[in-house]
Length: 142
Image (cartoon, helix red, strand yellow):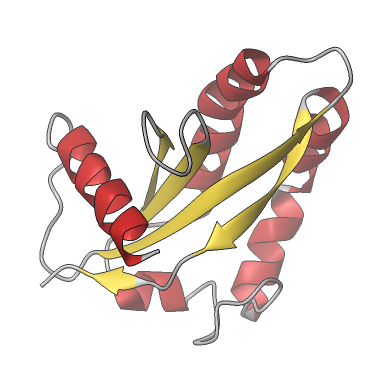
């Protein structure tokens, strides 16, 4: 699992180097996506909606957050997707999530933010598919 994280993190670093540089104190969180598609929808349709609608909505709602989608090209998770969340800092993340970032462990602001995102999540779940994530620990750039 450590090797998987290193591979995903290095991929994310390479990906972000073209548009956004990681800075000291940025907080990274990686979620390996287990996707259950709606019948008749393809992974490509899910991915297109996620990139064009879900990510921009989340980035707008969560101040200080940038999200990237990753696709594994080899190894245990070949052809699977993941997302990497990059917060400006641990403090930016802590505005929305309690220290224990397990599912549903939001601050009051995080709960309000997730409520505002309910429509885009329902649209994704109903029309494209839903996903659960294998959440990794948060990492701070040194």
